[in-house]
Image 1 (cartoon, rainbow, N blue to C red):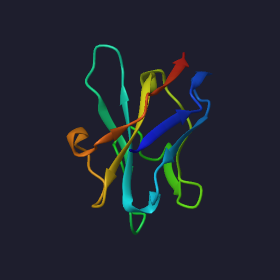
Image 2: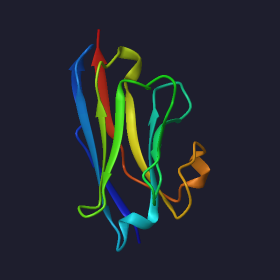
Image 3: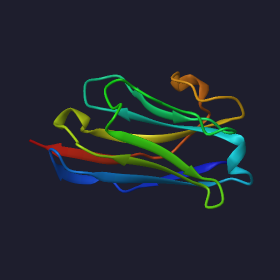
Length: 124
């Protein structure tokens, strides 16, 4: 089975940066499209960013475009999210998600595998 383990969350002041990582225990990481979602209290889980399995195409929610960068290292079976210029509204639990084959998707129901989440808190 696929297991995803996130790390890198924490407390940071507005304007600061954090880098999240997600390590996958899977035979062929490159076969999986990957994404980051986040879930803030009182809100629905929302798509943050996605990256294709094959050509590495990326996509970002408008709320993070220009501030966040998603990347993957298939050799290390690792997904990353570099978050710069953080804002208090970025505060949430961040989850990585994996989808076998196919492109990234904004729909959470397209992802069969999820990590346990890592808390990101941005103070004003």
